[in-house]
Amino acid sequence: MTIAAISTPDAMGSIAMIRISGEDAVKTAGRVFMPVSGKPVSEMAGYTAAYGGIYDDGVKLDDGVLLVYRAPKSYTGEDVAEITCHGGIYVARSVLRACINAGARLAEAGEFTKRALLNGKMSLTQAEAVIDVINSVNGRYLACSNAQKDGSLFGKIEGIADKILGVSSHIAAWMDYPEDGLDSFETSSHIGQLTDCCLQLSLLLKSCEIGRIMREGVVAAIVGKPNAGKSTLMNLLTRRERSIVTDIPGTTRDIVEDTVNMNGAVVRLCDCAGIRDTNDAAEKIGIEYMYRQIEESALILAVFDNSRPLEKEDYALMEKIAGKTSICVINKTDLENRLDLAVLATQFGNVVEICAKDTASLEKLVAVINKVLEINSLDLSAGFIANERQRICALDAERALTQAITGIENNAPMDVTGVLLESALEALYRLSGKSASAEIIDEVFKNFCVGK
Ligand SMILES: Nc1nc2c(ncn2[C@@H]2O[C@H](COP(=O)(O)OP(=O)(O)OP(=O)(O)O)[C@@H](O)[C@H]2O)c(=O)[nH]1
Ligand SMILES: [Mg+2]
Image (cartoon, rainbow, N blue to C red; front, side, top):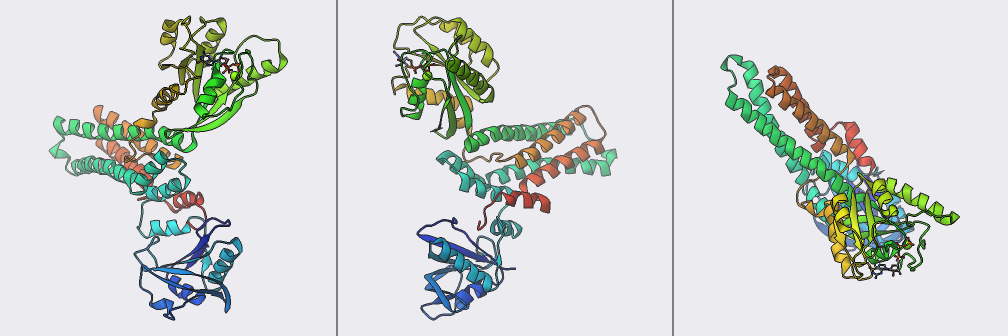
């Protein structure tokens, strides 16, 4: 069945593109598009364009350009015709309607990419990467998504699967001829290879969290006692006068939020009220909000004032954030030191000394935040687990592999190990799409927009 959709956004723009794909794509285009050259559309070769008029039942809608792709050299692997017209919402919809009247069916969300998958133009992980390219909000994420689209994750998963397959066929062969026996050298080689696969999978699973941070960002709370310089820090990181700064303790009450892109890490900063005992009703509520924000944040920027010794509020804060991913920010280093730095060094794994009033501190702080979020440890060209579906498959494979390794180490029956390796392979093939069911494929394409 030939399908059609508007592939550009459903909004006003300078141009719009209507994509038609399927066996009758060129025939359908020929019914709505008349090249000024007079040459029939049906005679157009792949990768050629024509300028002409677009018509619906003899009524002219617009002038435009038709681009023809011939199977299999197209995005979907089928014949594709793309009509580009002026970018008004009404005109684009009218051209689409003309294509439907000429025999095409309206495409479902992601149906073009789904056809590309079914026609072997890309793997499931590559198709998923197409969504990530569209959703990319910064250069690092785009670079990762592009590498993924070029098959980096697929290649890695295939590599792991091939290794497991090698061990699993060896075990299967042994089960057919058990009298040959497996010597201890072979057993340890199996364990070595499977352990290596397990390690690669756990690295991939770790990359999942970094991928999520790049995609969705992290929420970071800026906390500390009043006057420590939290709002000054907020303004430094957002590079604007976002929060009110005064030398009066208790200035910030409501949570002030802003999102910044820190070299690839999208961070939602929340500047909070300072922690202290107070009788001021509004400030009390602000402090309650601050405690709630600590619970909801993945990263804590704990600000300490270098010019004041540690006080009970500082200890209360440290107790509150114990166990959370946090950075100790020692502020006001331009002032004489009265802060007990040694105590803080024992409490925090990450300490950074800054002067929030000085923009020169920005780079230093961003570098520490990036280090803590492990953003730079992500190899842009290496595949990474990009979504929950892939993560569940990788986890299933890792679990089965770990059990198989323990089994081999404890001389478990070979057929049990064989079954576990089969199940690890099945999970990996599900991940790459080699054995993905129709339901899985439908689920993936639900996240697409119509026209892609
Ligand atoms: N000397 C010096 N002063 C600073 C520095 N950072 C902030 N200040 C000053 O410290 C005072 C308090 O700064 P804020 O940023 O409002 O402090 P805060 O932690 O948000 O305070 P609350 O909102 O009351 O909890 C202001 O007068 C700032 O100008 C610094 O690095 N050095
Ligand atoms: Mg403040």
